[in-house]
Amino acid sequence: MTNDWIFKDGTTQTSCTTFPYAYRAMHTALKKGVEQGRKHDDMIRRMSIISPMKDTHGDKRVYSYAAATSMAQNSGLLDASGQINSREFKRR
Image (cartoon, rainbow, N blue to C red; front, side):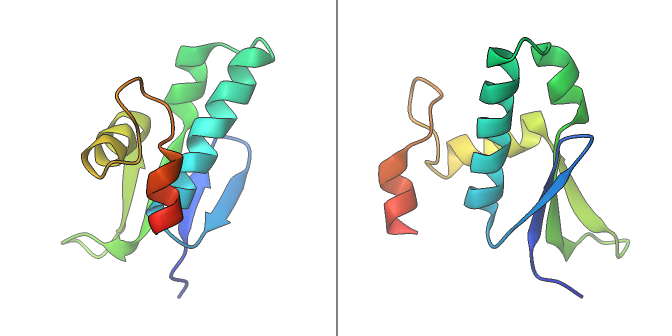
């Protein structure tokens, strides 16, 4: 069993040590994809973050883009404009 958070974007998966780093990978992948001309909504539908913690059924928790963004906002990982709060990453 691994204790890593996993960011999946539909084609690849990236292993991260914590939720903040998995979210930053998601945020960066979305930004780069839009810059390359990919459709924002299509990308969001494929993105998820998988937690190492299990739910009440014993399955790993999977967070959609919307749920992960909400968690990031609530924990201060995003600033008021929706950008990554680099000060918060320096503290973690």
